[in-house]
Length: 190
Image (tube, rainbow, N blue to C red; front, top):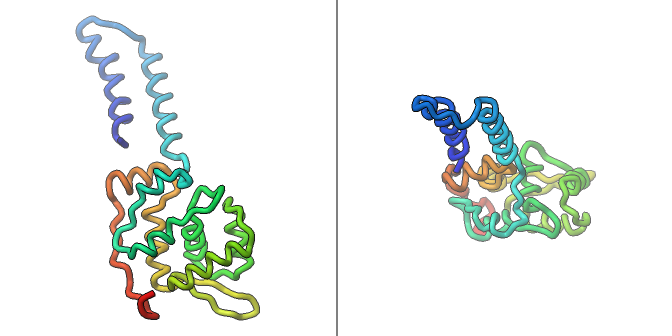
């Protein structure tokens, strides 16, 4: 699927500009052939750079996360109304690099197009805490961070729920998403 357009882009000029002229058949001038090739490549690149719409249930059903318990996979793929990316995965991605306090984390998630109230988002924080994916510590404000299982989920989200079409095709149709085994929970089985 990824190679179809590039192969055609190479074959069309070869046929019209090299092989057919060998037999004294001149169907097209070189300029229209190159114009078609360039337009095709531009449209192809545009398609590959489009964002994946996980709000389409068929697309989300194609997502498989290897080596993960079923309840964690379900949690990572949980969608909300009006969002184009799973909310639990968005929370994990926002906690991937650093600890964040609750209000900043809520604001970042809302800025990403997830139209939930702070109270609704906090419910997802609680679900992720019960699954031992994130943890929090109470200081002046509540601060969230990823556990070992959360760090595994961060890598899984980056590989299995890519944001661009190219990586979605690469990861799911070509099955390029190797992940280590899911870590054992430190608080016992949940």
